[in-house]
Length: 451
Image: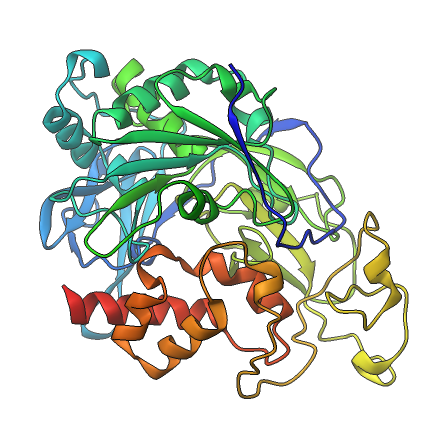
Protein backbone atom coordinates (compact mmCIF):
# COMPACT_ATOMS: atom_id res chain seq x y z
CA UNK A 1 0.00 0.00 0.00
CA UNK A 2 1.46 3.32 -1.05
CA UNK A 3 1.79 6.06 1.53
CA UNK A 4 0.10 9.41 1.11
CA UNK A 5 2.42 11.96 -0.56
CA UNK A 6 2.74 15.64 0.31
CA UNK A 7 4.83 17.82 -1.97
CA UNK A 8 6.60 20.81 -0.46
CA UNK A 9 7.17 23.66 -2.92
CA UNK A 10 8.55 26.36 -0.63
CA UNK A 11 12.05 25.95 0.70
CA UNK A 12 15.71 25.99 -0.30
CA UNK A 13 18.33 23.28 -0.70
CA UNK A 14 21.75 24.56 0.38
CA UNK A 15 24.48 22.68 -1.44
CA UNK A 16 27.69 22.38 0.59
CA UNK A 17 30.68 20.21 -0.23
CA UNK A 18 31.76 17.52 2.20
CA UNK A 19 28.87 15.04 2.47
CA UNK A 20 29.63 11.91 4.49
CA UNK A 21 30.38 8.78 2.49
CA UNK A 22 28.62 5.55 3.45
CA UNK A 23 31.60 4.35 5.46
CA UNK A 24 31.62 3.60 9.19
CA UNK A 25 34.69 3.86 11.41
CA UNK A 26 34.82 2.92 15.06
CA UNK A 27 36.68 5.25 17.37
CA UNK A 28 37.94 4.72 20.91
CA UNK A 29 36.07 6.25 23.80
CA UNK A 30 37.72 9.40 25.10
CA UNK A 31 39.29 9.16 28.55
CA UNK A 32 36.74 11.66 29.84
CA UNK A 33 33.04 11.99 28.98
CA UNK A 34 30.96 15.06 29.71
CA UNK A 35 27.26 15.42 30.49
CA UNK A 36 25.95 18.98 30.21
CA UNK A 37 22.52 19.85 31.70
CA UNK A 38 22.29 22.78 29.25
CA UNK A 39 21.81 20.22 26.49
CA UNK A 40 18.34 19.68 27.96
CA UNK A 41 16.65 23.03 27.53
CA UNK A 42 14.32 24.21 30.25
CA UNK A 43 15.21 21.81 33.07
CA UNK A 44 16.43 22.59 36.58
CA UNK A 45 18.87 19.79 37.50
CA UNK A 46 19.31 18.32 40.96
CA UNK A 47 22.55 16.33 41.14
CA UNK A 48 22.29 12.77 42.48
CA UNK A 49 25.99 11.80 42.51
CA UNK A 50 29.15 13.02 44.21
CA UNK A 51 32.70 13.34 42.93
CA UNK A 52 34.39 9.97 43.18
CA UNK A 53 31.18 7.95 42.80
CA UNK A 54 31.26 4.91 40.51
CA UNK A 55 28.55 4.84 37.86
CA UNK A 56 27.36 2.48 35.12
CA UNK A 57 25.81 3.39 31.79
CA UNK A 58 22.23 4.17 32.78
CA UNK A 59 23.01 5.36 36.33
CA UNK A 60 21.13 8.62 37.13
CA UNK A 61 23.45 11.65 37.39
CA UNK A 62 20.73 14.23 38.07
CA UNK A 63 16.98 14.61 37.80
CA UNK A 64 14.55 17.40 36.98
CA UNK A 65 13.76 19.29 40.18
CA UNK A 66 10.04 19.62 39.44
CA UNK A 67 9.73 15.97 38.27
CA UNK A 68 12.07 13.86 40.46
CA UNK A 69 11.15 10.73 38.51
CA UNK A 70 12.69 12.24 35.32
CA UNK A 71 16.31 11.03 35.36
CA UNK A 72 19.27 12.06 33.22
CA UNK A 73 21.77 9.23 33.13
CA UNK A 74 25.42 8.50 32.49
CA UNK A 75 26.15 7.39 28.90
CA UNK A 76 29.14 5.29 30.04
CA UNK A 77 30.52 3.57 33.10
CA UNK A 78 33.36 4.98 35.16
CA UNK A 79 34.03 7.34 38.04
CA UNK A 80 32.64 10.83 38.48
CA UNK A 81 35.64 13.10 38.17
CA UNK A 82 34.15 16.54 38.66
CA UNK A 83 30.87 18.38 39.08
CA UNK A 84 31.51 21.87 37.72
CA UNK A 85 29.27 24.66 39.00
CA UNK A 86 28.95 28.27 37.91
CA UNK A 87 27.26 31.31 39.37
CA UNK A 88 24.66 30.61 42.06
CA UNK A 89 25.88 26.99 42.06
CA UNK A 90 24.39 26.34 38.63
CA UNK A 91 25.52 22.93 37.35
CA UNK A 92 27.63 23.54 34.24
CA UNK A 93 28.69 19.98 33.48
CA UNK A 94 29.59 16.62 34.99
CA UNK A 95 32.74 14.82 33.83
CA UNK A 96 33.27 11.07 34.06
CA UNK A 97 36.54 9.12 33.85
CA UNK A 98 35.58 6.35 31.46
CA UNK A 99 36.10 2.60 31.93
CA UNK A 100 37.77 0.74 29.08
CA UNK A 101 34.79 -1.63 28.93
CA UNK A 102 31.33 -0.21 29.49
CA UNK A 103 29.26 -1.75 32.27
CA UNK A 104 25.50 -1.29 32.01
CA UNK A 105 22.85 -0.87 34.66
CA UNK A 106 20.22 -3.57 34.19
CA UNK A 107 16.56 -2.62 33.91
CA UNK A 108 13.58 -4.90 34.40
CA UNK A 109 11.60 -4.69 31.20
CA UNK A 110 8.74 -6.39 29.39
CA UNK A 111 7.78 -6.30 25.75
CA UNK A 112 5.91 -3.11 24.83
CA UNK A 113 2.91 -5.24 23.86
CA UNK A 114 2.80 -6.67 27.41
CA UNK A 115 3.30 -3.29 29.12
CA UNK A 116 0.86 -0.56 30.00
CA UNK A 117 1.37 3.07 29.08
CA UNK A 118 2.15 3.89 32.72
CA UNK A 119 4.79 1.15 32.88
CA UNK A 120 6.45 2.36 29.68
CA UNK A 121 6.36 5.97 30.86
CA UNK A 122 7.89 5.05 34.23
CA UNK A 123 10.64 2.99 32.60
CA UNK A 124 11.58 5.74 30.14
CA UNK A 125 11.68 8.30 32.93
CA UNK A 126 13.83 6.04 35.11
CA UNK A 127 16.24 5.13 32.30
CA UNK A 128 16.76 8.71 31.12
CA UNK A 129 15.35 8.09 27.65
CA UNK A 130 12.40 10.40 28.25
CA UNK A 131 14.79 13.32 27.71
CA UNK A 132 15.28 12.41 24.03
CA UNK A 133 11.71 13.38 23.16
CA UNK A 134 10.47 16.89 22.45
CA UNK A 135 7.06 18.46 23.04
CA UNK A 136 5.25 21.03 20.98
CA UNK A 137 4.27 23.59 22.11
CA UNK A 138 7.47 25.19 23.44
CA UNK A 139 9.98 22.66 21.98
CA UNK A 140 10.91 21.26 25.40
CA UNK A 141 11.19 17.85 27.03
CA UNK A 142 7.61 16.54 27.36
CA UNK A 143 5.66 17.04 30.54
CA UNK A 144 5.04 13.47 31.84
CA UNK A 145 1.66 14.56 33.19
CA UNK A 146 0.35 15.36 29.71
CA UNK A 147 -0.62 12.93 26.98
CA UNK A 148 0.10 13.78 23.33
CA UNK A 149 -2.56 13.68 20.64
CA UNK A 150 0.10 12.29 18.26
CA UNK A 151 3.81 11.43 18.02
CA UNK A 152 5.84 12.40 14.96
CA UNK A 153 9.09 10.88 13.68
CA UNK A 154 10.83 12.17 10.57
CA UNK A 155 13.00 9.42 9.12
CA UNK A 156 14.95 11.72 6.82
CA UNK A 157 16.72 15.06 7.05
CA UNK A 158 17.01 17.57 4.20
CA UNK A 159 19.34 19.99 6.03
CA UNK A 160 22.80 20.67 4.56
CA UNK A 161 25.02 17.55 4.64
CA UNK A 162 22.54 15.82 6.95
CA UNK A 163 23.18 12.16 7.83
CA UNK A 164 21.32 9.48 5.92
CA UNK A 165 19.10 7.74 8.49
CA UNK A 166 18.23 4.98 6.04
CA UNK A 167 21.92 4.05 5.89
CA UNK A 168 22.26 4.37 9.67
CA UNK A 169 19.21 2.34 10.68
CA UNK A 170 18.66 -0.17 7.86
CA UNK A 171 20.40 -2.94 9.86
CA UNK A 172 18.69 -1.94 13.13
CA UNK A 173 15.05 -1.98 12.10
CA UNK A 174 14.15 -4.54 14.79
CA UNK A 175 15.16 -2.09 17.54
CA UNK A 176 13.43 0.74 15.66
CA UNK A 177 10.19 -1.25 15.46
CA UNK A 178 10.32 -2.03 19.19
CA UNK A 179 10.86 1.65 19.93
CA UNK A 180 7.86 2.59 17.81
CA UNK A 181 5.74 -0.07 19.55
CA UNK A 182 6.63 1.47 22.93
CA UNK A 183 5.90 5.01 21.76
CA UNK A 184 2.53 4.02 20.33
CA UNK A 185 1.40 3.06 23.85
CA UNK A 186 2.05 6.62 25.07
CA UNK A 187 -0.49 8.36 22.84
CA UNK A 188 -4.21 8.00 22.31
CA UNK A 189 -3.61 9.07 18.72
CA UNK A 190 -1.21 7.84 16.05
CA UNK A 191 2.52 7.60 15.53
CA UNK A 192 3.26 9.42 12.26
CA UNK A 193 6.30 8.44 10.23
CA UNK A 194 7.66 10.88 7.66
CA UNK A 195 9.30 9.11 4.69
CA UNK A 196 11.33 10.47 1.79
CA UNK A 197 9.93 7.91 -0.66
CA UNK A 198 7.68 4.86 -0.91
CA UNK A 199 10.84 2.78 -1.35
CA UNK A 200 12.19 3.84 2.06
CA UNK A 201 13.54 1.09 4.33
CA UNK A 202 11.17 2.50 6.96
CA UNK A 203 8.13 1.64 4.83
CA UNK A 204 8.08 -1.80 6.50
CA UNK A 205 7.59 -0.35 9.98
CA UNK A 206 4.23 -1.43 11.45
CA UNK A 207 1.78 0.40 13.67
CA UNK A 208 2.36 3.84 12.15
CA UNK A 209 0.77 6.19 9.64
CA UNK A 210 3.39 6.77 6.95
CA UNK A 211 3.45 9.90 4.81
CA UNK A 212 5.92 10.67 2.03
CA UNK A 213 7.23 14.24 1.90
CA UNK A 214 9.02 15.52 -1.18
CA UNK A 215 10.56 18.84 -2.07
CA UNK A 216 13.40 21.09 -0.93
CA UNK A 217 14.56 21.66 2.63
CA UNK A 218 12.80 21.84 5.10
CA UNK A 219 10.71 18.94 3.74
CA UNK A 220 12.41 16.68 6.28
CA UNK A 221 11.67 18.89 9.30
CA UNK A 222 9.21 17.34 11.71
CA UNK A 223 7.56 20.75 12.20
CA UNK A 224 6.54 20.77 8.54
CA UNK A 225 5.04 17.28 8.94
CA UNK A 226 3.04 18.34 12.00
CA UNK A 227 1.75 21.45 10.23
CA UNK A 228 0.52 19.50 7.19
CA UNK A 229 -0.91 16.48 9.02
CA UNK A 230 -2.07 17.42 12.53
CA UNK A 231 -1.45 21.07 13.49
CA UNK A 232 -1.07 21.99 17.16
CA UNK A 233 -3.77 24.23 18.61
CA UNK A 234 -3.85 25.88 22.00
CA UNK A 235 -4.24 23.26 24.73
CA UNK A 236 -2.99 20.40 22.54
CA UNK A 237 0.30 18.53 22.81
CA UNK A 238 2.36 16.69 20.20
CA UNK A 239 5.63 14.83 20.81
CA UNK A 240 8.54 14.35 18.43
CA UNK A 241 11.69 12.23 18.48
CA UNK A 242 14.67 11.71 16.19
CA UNK A 243 14.97 8.29 14.49
CA UNK A 244 18.31 7.37 16.09
CA UNK A 245 16.83 8.09 19.51
CA UNK A 246 13.98 5.66 18.78
CA UNK A 247 16.71 3.00 18.62
CA UNK A 248 17.65 3.72 22.24
CA UNK A 249 14.10 2.96 23.34
CA UNK A 250 14.10 -0.25 21.28
CA UNK A 251 17.41 -1.40 22.79
CA UNK A 252 16.09 -0.72 26.29
CA UNK A 253 13.12 -3.05 25.75
CA UNK A 254 15.09 -5.65 23.76
CA UNK A 255 18.23 -5.76 25.94
CA UNK A 256 17.27 -4.18 29.26
CA UNK A 257 20.11 -1.62 29.09
CA UNK A 258 20.62 2.02 28.14
CA UNK A 259 22.87 1.75 25.09
CA UNK A 260 23.44 5.23 23.65
CA UNK A 261 25.72 4.09 20.82
CA UNK A 262 25.03 6.09 17.68
CA UNK A 263 26.51 6.93 14.29
CA UNK A 264 27.70 10.50 13.84
CA UNK A 265 28.43 11.98 10.41
CA UNK A 266 31.57 14.11 10.14
CA UNK A 267 30.84 16.56 7.32
CA UNK A 268 31.86 19.85 5.74
CA UNK A 269 34.24 21.36 3.19
CA UNK A 270 37.16 21.31 5.65
CA UNK A 271 36.93 17.55 6.26
CA UNK A 272 39.41 15.36 4.42
CA UNK A 273 37.44 12.13 4.64
CA UNK A 274 33.75 12.80 5.41
CA UNK A 275 32.23 9.61 6.83
CA UNK A 276 30.31 8.11 9.75
CA UNK A 277 31.75 7.29 13.16
CA UNK A 278 30.33 4.93 15.76
CA UNK A 279 30.45 6.60 19.14
CA UNK A 280 28.42 7.55 22.24
CA UNK A 281 26.97 10.92 23.23
CA UNK A 282 29.28 12.74 25.61
CA UNK A 283 32.42 11.57 23.79
CA UNK A 284 35.09 14.14 22.97
CA UNK A 285 34.90 15.13 19.29
CA UNK A 286 38.69 15.22 19.10
CA UNK A 287 38.52 11.44 18.71
CA UNK A 288 36.39 11.95 15.59
CA UNK A 289 38.18 14.83 13.90
CA UNK A 290 41.70 13.60 14.61
CA UNK A 291 43.46 13.00 11.28
CA UNK A 292 40.29 13.80 9.31
CA UNK A 293 40.69 17.54 8.72
CA UNK A 294 42.35 19.30 5.81
CA UNK A 295 45.61 21.08 6.61
CA UNK A 296 44.73 24.77 6.51
CA UNK A 297 46.21 27.95 7.99
CA UNK A 298 42.89 29.64 8.79
CA UNK A 299 40.73 28.98 11.87
CA UNK A 300 37.87 26.50 11.63
CA UNK A 301 34.40 26.45 13.12
CA UNK A 302 33.20 23.19 14.63
CA UNK A 303 29.44 22.77 14.80
CA UNK A 304 27.49 20.15 16.72
CA UNK A 305 24.75 19.54 14.16
CA UNK A 306 24.21 21.09 10.73
CA UNK A 307 25.26 24.60 9.71
CA UNK A 308 21.71 25.99 10.00
CA UNK A 309 20.66 24.89 13.48
CA UNK A 310 23.80 23.40 15.06
CA UNK A 311 25.65 24.75 18.08
CA UNK A 312 29.20 26.05 17.93
CA UNK A 313 31.67 23.96 19.94
CA UNK A 314 35.45 23.80 20.28
CA UNK A 315 37.64 21.17 18.67
CA UNK A 316 37.86 19.59 22.13
CA UNK A 317 34.13 19.81 22.75
CA UNK A 318 31.80 16.95 23.61
CA UNK A 319 28.95 15.38 21.65
CA UNK A 320 25.50 16.58 22.66
CA UNK A 321 22.93 13.86 23.52
CA UNK A 322 20.96 14.14 20.24
CA UNK A 323 23.90 14.99 17.98
CA UNK A 324 24.09 12.91 14.77
CA UNK A 325 26.33 15.27 12.80
CA UNK A 326 29.46 17.38 13.17
CA UNK A 327 30.04 20.10 10.57
CA UNK A 328 33.39 21.80 9.99
CA UNK A 329 33.63 25.04 7.99
CA UNK A 330 35.99 28.00 7.63
CA UNK A 331 35.46 30.71 10.27
CA UNK A 332 36.04 33.29 7.53
CA UNK A 333 38.03 35.62 9.78
CA UNK A 334 41.03 35.44 7.46
CA UNK A 335 39.01 36.02 4.29
CA UNK A 336 39.25 39.53 2.85
CA UNK A 337 37.49 40.29 -0.42
CA UNK A 338 37.48 43.44 -2.49
CA UNK A 339 34.02 45.10 -2.41
CA UNK A 340 32.72 42.34 -0.14
CA UNK A 341 29.28 40.98 -1.04
CA UNK A 342 28.94 43.53 -3.89
CA UNK A 343 31.73 41.92 -5.90
CA UNK A 344 30.39 39.90 -8.87
CA UNK A 345 31.37 36.26 -8.49
CA UNK A 346 30.63 32.66 -9.45
CA UNK A 347 31.86 30.90 -6.30
CA UNK A 348 29.32 32.27 -3.80
CA UNK A 349 25.71 31.26 -3.37
CA UNK A 350 22.86 33.74 -3.02
CA UNK A 351 19.22 32.93 -2.33
CA UNK A 352 18.30 36.02 -4.37
CA UNK A 353 19.46 36.85 -7.89
CA UNK A 354 22.48 38.76 -6.61
CA UNK A 355 24.84 36.17 -8.13
CA UNK A 356 24.33 34.04 -11.22
CA UNK A 357 25.11 30.99 -9.09
CA UNK A 358 21.38 30.96 -8.20
CA UNK A 359 20.96 29.21 -11.56
CA UNK A 360 23.54 26.50 -10.76
CA UNK A 361 21.22 24.27 -8.77
CA UNK A 362 23.57 21.29 -8.43
CA UNK A 363 26.79 23.18 -7.73
CA UNK A 364 28.28 22.65 -4.26
CA UNK A 365 29.80 25.64 -2.52
CA UNK A 366 32.42 26.09 0.18
CA UNK A 367 30.69 28.18 2.83
CA UNK A 368 32.25 29.99 5.77
CA UNK A 369 30.80 31.41 8.99
CA UNK A 370 30.74 35.12 8.10
CA UNK A 371 27.52 37.06 8.58
CA UNK A 372 28.04 38.95 5.28
CA UNK A 373 26.19 42.10 6.33
CA UNK A 374 25.06 44.06 9.34
CA UNK A 375 21.98 43.62 11.50
CA UNK A 376 19.14 46.09 11.03
CA UNK A 377 15.40 46.45 11.63
CA UNK A 378 13.12 43.75 10.27
CA UNK A 379 12.12 44.29 6.64
CA UNK A 380 8.65 43.09 5.62
CA UNK A 381 9.67 41.93 2.15
CA UNK A 382 8.07 38.50 1.94
CA UNK A 383 11.45 36.76 1.76
CA UNK A 384 10.60 34.45 4.68
CA UNK A 385 7.49 33.19 2.89
CA UNK A 386 9.55 31.88 -0.03
CA UNK A 387 11.35 29.35 2.17
CA UNK A 388 8.73 28.73 4.89
CA UNK A 389 6.33 25.92 3.84
CA UNK A 390 4.10 25.97 6.94
CA UNK A 391 0.61 27.48 7.03
CA UNK A 392 1.86 30.32 9.22
CA UNK A 393 2.75 33.95 8.49
CA UNK A 394 6.42 33.93 9.57
CA UNK A 395 7.14 37.67 9.35
CA UNK A 396 4.05 38.60 11.34
CA UNK A 397 4.79 35.92 13.94
CA UNK A 398 8.37 37.14 14.37
CA UNK A 399 7.15 40.72 14.81
CA UNK A 400 4.67 39.54 17.46
CA UNK A 401 7.47 37.68 19.22
CA UNK A 402 9.77 40.71 19.20
CA UNK A 403 6.90 42.79 20.65
CA UNK A 404 6.07 40.06 23.22
CA UNK A 405 2.43 40.22 22.13
CA UNK A 406 1.04 36.99 23.57
CA UNK A 407 -2.39 37.22 21.92
CA UNK A 408 -0.89 37.66 18.48
CA UNK A 409 1.70 34.93 19.08
CA UNK A 410 -1.09 32.49 19.96
CA UNK A 411 -3.21 33.47 16.96
CA UNK A 412 -0.27 33.32 14.53
CA UNK A 413 0.83 29.77 15.45
CA UNK A 414 3.51 30.10 18.13
CA UNK A 415 2.38 26.85 19.79
CA UNK A 416 3.30 24.94 16.65
CA UNK A 417 6.84 26.13 15.91
CA UNK A 418 10.37 25.44 17.11
CA UNK A 419 13.53 27.49 16.46
CA UNK A 420 14.68 25.09 13.71
CA UNK A 421 11.58 25.94 11.67
CA UNK A 422 12.99 29.45 11.18
CA UNK A 423 16.54 28.39 10.26
CA UNK A 424 16.06 28.98 6.52
CA UNK A 425 14.34 32.30 7.18
CA UNK A 426 17.40 33.29 9.18
CA UNK A 427 19.66 32.18 6.32
CA UNK A 428 17.91 34.34 3.70
CA UNK A 429 17.13 37.27 6.03
CA UNK A 430 18.61 40.51 4.67
CA UNK A 431 18.13 42.04 8.13
CA UNK A 432 20.50 39.45 9.64
CA UNK A 433 18.21 38.95 12.62
CA UNK A 434 18.91 36.01 15.00
CA UNK A 435 15.49 34.52 14.30
CA UNK A 436 16.10 31.18 16.02
CA UNK A 437 17.21 32.93 19.20
CA UNK A 438 14.15 35.19 19.02
CA UNK A 439 11.86 32.14 18.68
CA UNK A 440 13.62 30.30 21.53
CA UNK A 441 13.31 33.26 23.89
CA UNK A 442 9.69 33.87 22.89
CA UNK A 443 8.64 30.26 23.46
CA UNK A 444 10.19 30.38 26.94
CA UNK A 445 8.44 33.69 27.61
CA UNK A 446 5.13 32.33 26.36
CA UNK A 447 5.41 29.25 28.57
CA UNK A 448 6.22 31.32 31.65
CA UNK A 449 3.23 33.60 31.06
CA UNK A 450 0.64 31.02 30.01
CA UNK A 451 1.37 28.01 32.23
